[in-house]
Amino acid sequence: MRREWLPLITIILFAALAVGVTADDTESPSIELITPESDSTLYYGQIDFKFKPNDNSDVYRCKLYVDEDMVRSSSDITKDSENTFSQNLLEGTYKWSMWCEDSAGNNRTTSNRSITVSADTQPPNITLQNFIETEKKETIEFNYTVVDNGSGIEKCELIVDENVVQTSTSITENESQHFTYGLAEGDWAWSVKCTDNHANYKQSDSSQVSILLPPQIELVSPDDNQETVDDELIFKYIPKSTRKIERCDLWIGDELNQTSFDITKDKENSFELTHVPTQLIEWTIQCRDSEEVSVNASARTVIVTTTEILESAPPAVMLVHPIDITIVNKTKFSYKASSELLNITICELFIDDLWNETDAEVETGVQQDFSEISFELGNHSWYVLCIDDRDQSTFSENSSFIVTDKSPEPVKELQFDNETIEAEKTTMADILGQSGLRRAVKIVILLLIPLIIVILVLMKELQGGQAITGLYSKRE
Image (cartoon, rainbow, N blue to C red; front, top):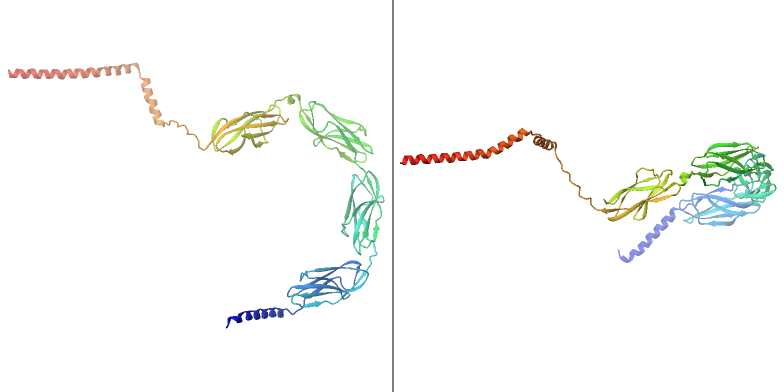
């Protein structure tokens, strides 16, 4: 086969494949019309036409026809899923259908559906859910439900004493809805007005609500966070109310301390505490009126401190370790802090004049340890800052230490086993325990030994002289 025929053959093969693919898809898309249903009645305005196309290949384009006129078209179609075209229609009777085409050029048009579009002339139905009642609070929740059988709800309004005070456009029909609004003390009439999307509106019947606000309490003294050395405290307050105040209570922390039933409205009243020890006191006043409506004033704190504590010295700080020593690589920093009358709230470690760590659980008079820390080789310094609960602070002395990369040689200790120690003890006992007689005998023996040696030498010499004299006698 000649090479010049190859391009032509390739083109023919691709053309054949394309014809084969096109020939495989000869069926038109299927189209399922969902809504509006045939012969249904809708309210004028925006109408949603929903449909679901499907095909062996992709659905390329769909069009909406109303009374044989194409009014909407889109190629952004998802097959086998619900798609929507929206169209505004006025009052009248209409026929609608859908046309779709797949990627192979096959298309289909559905049969027509008839719909009637009319005006919504019926207003919404409103039901109030809380009726005449008494509320012992300022902020009230007004509950209602609304249903519109036509065009849907556009907005609802809360009306108090014929004045619109709130509006909502986020409405869910046939479910409890509410407005939240604050009212002053007194009797109020309220209602809800709702409007649908065709401007039909309806206002509900009116309901009554009575607002009973709790008394008001003005705390006079002591001021919040006030510090005093007095052991007698007078808690002053002014209660206010439109009704009679039946009682007021002094609360210390979570406990009821005192109660007064002789209350003068709009005047200064007081509670008194005596022999109060040094402590931090959280206090408040609670008052209740004739309608059993009560209120608590905002809590305050007073700090009672004796003269001794006011004059107390700041904490003392002593460094424990390391102090003027050489360490290897890392060490743990230890200290002791003490205070006679006050608590020590925090102690902070500074190394080379830089903050390193905070100890917030300081036990007075007991050695405390910071974390073990590694260092670079060389000279370093450290100190500790401690603060008591009167914010008095003390810096310890500054101590230094040297960081090296090896430990100093340990000092060797002489080691003796038990047998050696016992033998030494016996020898010394023998020497030190000898009697005077034994020492005298030993001295005599030592003196006699050289004497005996001298005698033996003389005896040998005498024997030698006698032998020579005998020899001379025989010669003669």
